[in-house]
Length: 211
Image (cartoon, rainbow, N blue to C red):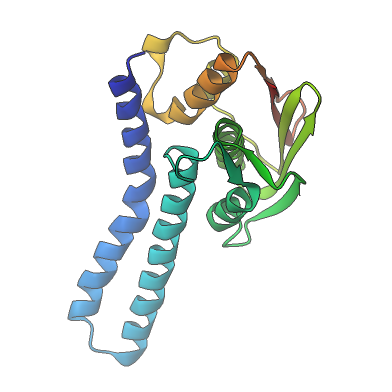
């Protein structure tokens, strides 16, 4: 896949995810302009605040997951990844987060793999639940594991196929942009992605990144 084609996939994904909170901001401003009741105006301001926070949290996450955050350094503070995940999935309390990453810094490639796996697993928790994120360095490289648990987990078969390399590059849709990025980064590093979704109420996605 050419670089501009992949950039188009990422842009489509970004626009899709930002459309809802930004649209809510626009609607809230229009309502506020026509509303004179103090109680309703206060409610409109609350909704505007929620939409603004959601938009900011999504942008912070995508900046790390898709962009060139962290400047030109080879490694990024892992606390940035934790803050981005908490902002995206933990703000409303619908998903409980567990963080098991002891490494203070991880490579940019590993950071993107971790965040995009989290994005896929978090989206699969359609009714909320728990999201545990782990990463461990060893002599052979870095292992990343994300576990999603919930009453209903829906992983699009297309995302699963892209993650494990069963989809051709000309068949990747915008909704699978994150999965394709994970696949490419892990494959370039000589690693492997594994998906276990056979157990009801649980999804495991792991990636091994050789040193």
